[in-house]
Length: 205
Length: 142
View 1 (tube, rainbow over the protein chains, first blue to last red):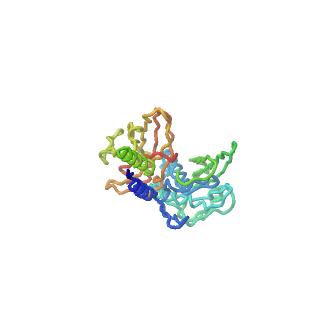
View 2: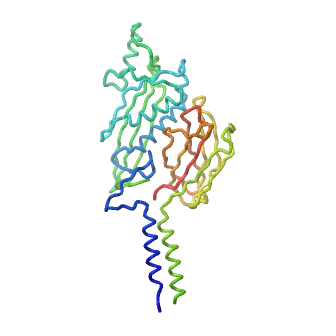
View 3: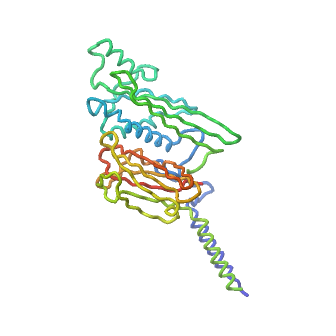
């Protein structure tokens, strides 16, 4: 009796070759483009990935909008100065990876304009706001040239590591403070925590 | 004997089709009327294959304003099963013409639902021009 072996192998070959969506030609030639903040991106335990920055920026902004702190400025849109954002994690990265997404959405909200011509003068958490306030207190009429910022945004990113057996947990804290320069007080204290747990990195989440 | 082989052949094909199904369908919901300003707007749902619509329900959507002029929504998701599930959701904001904003909300956020639990996920539009949204939900990688 002839068994239909050939159709089975033919089906197996077609199905196995069609269900592999990466289809490398060489042994490891599988580089490809993925969309911004895609769920197919890499998840590293030891560092902050692109999706983490976008997620943190989004959550922090939403918290800022909920408090309504920006609406309280007498002149709309108020001018916002971006102070120092300190990276206190174990890996180097440019904090603009976080701030640029926030600046874009802040500008889109039409509640602030962002000062790009003034910068922090020292190493303090928000040295610029401190200096500006000192000059205001001193009554210096030329203390601050226009445009005069009403708010200053500063902050830091902190990393905490915990391990139990072979499982590692990384906590990345994104801490931002919005200071009202006129009064020298913080009007919003944002905190966003991105926690990742596992044994090793993964592709996709 | 031949019929057994044909039967095995069919079972084999079905098995392979299930095992190599690597797509992860997305469940989507949006407001029925983009201009609907009510606190509990009607929803328009798009059901996809993959079983998520059997395990998950968008119970309701509440909307309001934040920062005076930014649209804010809260989507209440219910786990219809007894098992917990890890999901990813994303809320994309659109203007009145249905054009999607390229802002920081276009990122997949993780949400964990315990069995039969209702969880509220929130989002605030970054622009006062945002009038409608797409909620997208998919299962997280196991």
